[in-house]
Length: 445
Image 1: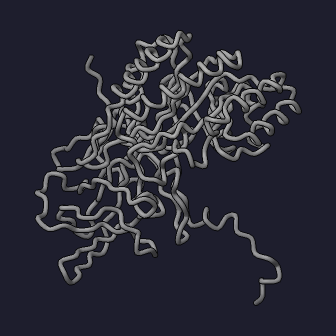
Image 2 (image 1 turned 180 degrees about the vertical axis):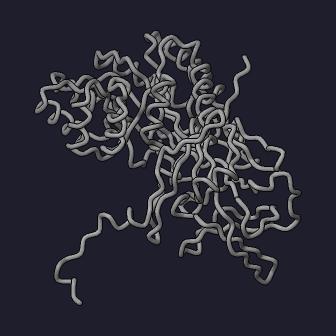
Image 3 (image 1 turned 45 degrees about the vertical axis):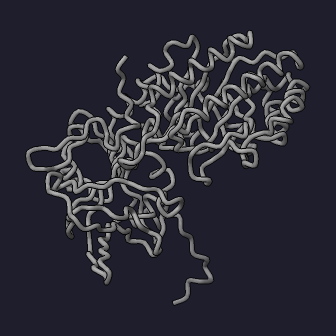
């Protein structure tokens, strides 16, 4: 079965070049988009998201009971909620803002999973009031809080327990979450005790499954298979020694994408197929009923669908052959490079057919930090005024963006079949000061 997995390609699936030498995405000339909407500009290619969703669902198709959950923290807005709802995905959220976004988009509550390591009473209540959401429990104290809120609302909360399996993926230590000393999850050795606590409050809590997540931007399949073995043993332990049969197994997400030619992540289709086959084998070998299998890709769904467009500004040639070209964005719209040395692939969107340079340049941002570097060692003959496109910015760019240096966040445009539509408006200077308040005593002439 041939299935395209967009996470292994640096560019969106619709990327091409037209007769003018311009980059085209979603049937739209990005040079014209930059002229129409301004820069910096986030672009999201709808076809890439659709293809990614088809890939992960195809990989799971042989398993009898599955649900793909989109990890909203990667990129979430009203339009994204409507799109993944149309594509048949569920949604995992981690805040009241993400819960409210899902609610405003009329997302089915039964397909919403509430995560996070410090859920507030307000977030838990908001979620339970939406309907039949699932809550992924991260600590014993949180278990008690969910019980209290559910009792007050006269509801029975459906919960999964997040465990730390002690599995460490091949990724940056800031984005690992499955190791034994992680701030996330419950220690495996305490699992039986925590399950017993949940059963004591079974009038308010319905324990339906286990969850584990090893981190983000992993390229390998082996850590996921190891997680499945560990969780299957947990299912056995709970069935034999506590008398509890769980019905849901959530192995998380975190599959990486190709940001540069040196990145070779497991294709999304192969990832989900391997997970499904291993779950079936592990549970069958242990004489366990097959649970509903959940996976939570986020970056692998939206990462390569995104492009950021910048306008090149001043060029600076320094001793030693170093050349800096400043772009009109940077760490405020993409904090990943300064946060954990993320690497990207750029192109000249207005001169895509031009030959590469034999000398490297460094694209830097406009913000007041020396670490505001977008791409090092780009072999492009860039000049002031060029339109620079950075691939692979669909995940964690908008989500992690800030107003550093009092700068507004860019607009986000959804492109599909030659149409371009604003799904997030650009923040204006007026937006930035709209919530400012000045004490009367400071209003001195």
